[in-house]
Image (cartoon, rainbow, N blue to C red; front, side, top):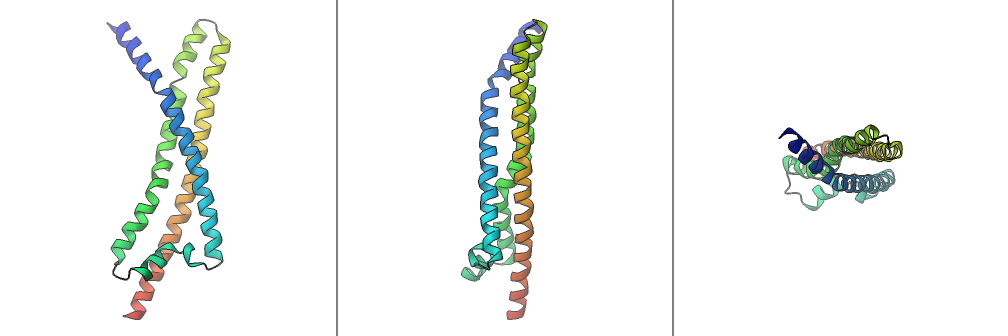
Length: 162
């Protein structure tokens, strides 16, 4: 009974390796796209281009939006980076643990080449996941800071106009 359950759990766990690795690759790609977008927006903000100040532009275009609505929009725009920051390390851990089962079995059978291959996959995946998390955390932090400044500027402009 226990042996059957053990084999079933092992097999089920191995099914998740490919989807987890694909998700890590997608998060890694997203991290660099988000970093590029952040760099572009930073350039726009330094140059005073209105597109770099998206909340200010939105507040001007839609004056009916109150502070709560603007905060909700800012929160929604940060959500993907926040999700990537939290999920990437979890997937990295999963991608580290899944190949450990085959590595331990190969070690028990004296197949060191298979151990090496499984460990290479495990550590490569966690490295990419942590890099993705670090990048998206940086993007999240900078954007959050910008949105807070923009919301403060909008509040000040509206207070002066009132």
